Length: 503
Ligand code: NAI
Ligand code: MG
Image 1: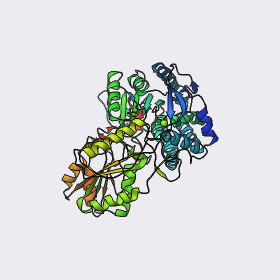
Image 2: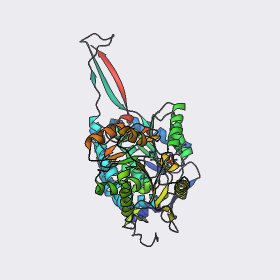
Image 3: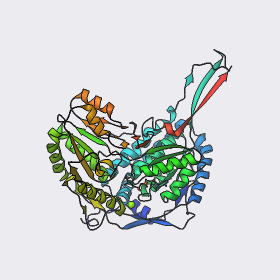
Image 4: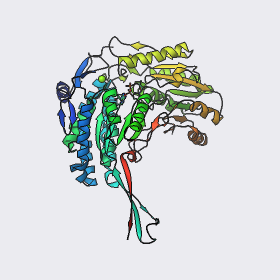
């Protein structure tokens, strides 16, 4: 694997961005961090340091909060809802114009294949912002036909108004950086909030580029701030802050729990959490094999398996288990591992050496606990954090690789020998997570019945993890609190005021 050799020339805009000094974006300007620390930004395909960013501190979060609080009352609040929508539409257009630079930065920083980065910038960057731009002038309250004791019948009106919740702290992970950033920014701005974004220290570059783009689009100073830094310092400062009204977090379950405690122990700020997953893909013998095989591969190995909705528990009926496993192994021959800039790459590197080692330790646990390694199982390449797509068969429900979110390219296959939906649902639900899942069969009544029995925020039929800006997404059980995407994704950024008028 020769990562550097086939790398295409980067666009001038990308080179210019990388070459500059990376400060903190507070109140509409790039300002010096108040601390001395910098963070090396590493290309996970080459292990080379591509640039350095300044790490912010608690003092910088305080500065950003002051800016965001004051922006909440200024020019931003004075815009009509439709004007706010137009700012978001300009933001979306500029994301499209910067597509190549954003995609290149994403590949350099995160390692994902260029094609996926381009697709994400368009679909989960620009289009996602457009979707929320459309909500700006549709955020409505209600009129409520009651006459409270104080208000005589016929002589009163009760109405509700939806107001921006306030200053939002957004803490995001490194697995799909630009999508994660936009997922927080777009509904915050559509609701009229102001936001302080803390990117993941392992992949912050596209978040920073978005700050420039937002400014150019006319987002007023202080409305959107980016403060880099480490989780325990800057992330904790956000979740503990007394003047932040909401934290929106995507990341690991443990950190989600820490954030919920910090919110409870400070100002009871509202919290939404999008955490891990270990989603089941349930395959019956009548499933369309031509469709299910490639979909199993995408479900498990998209973004190297570093995605929360990954379908990493394949539950397959015994009658077709061998055929499905053989089909998946054959399909994986085309899943080339390599640098994201190589056009035939489908699996890039994992984000870091730590993540690679963590994934390898799960693979070792799979072998030690008696799962049958069907394909993959190795870290590869002299440079870069690459791991082969890996499939384990003959898995048992209590194995580590069946219970834990691996966040790497590892699929665990379990079989069932029944059509009893209670038994199958029990197997599907035998996990602390409940984020996504899918059921594959031509029998619609079986499909709908089983879907209703699986305890996940998203369970699809004959496809896995259909994501769209308009479809609510989020987890049950330990996969989190609340929903993102769609109209429901706007709700956590709003608060309701009820007013009764007596006349
Ligand atoms: P992480 O949860 O530590 O990082 C996510 C974000 O949280 C980063 O921006 C980080 O700086 C921040 N953070 C860390 N500690 C914090 C704290 N005390 N307070 C506030 N913010 C804090 O995830 P990490 O360590 O990078 O990955 C470890 C594992 O977590 C992965 O192997 C995977 O299993 C899981 N994970 C799941 C994700 C998901 O989308 N479901 C995303 C990222 C990681
Ligand atoms: Mg990186």
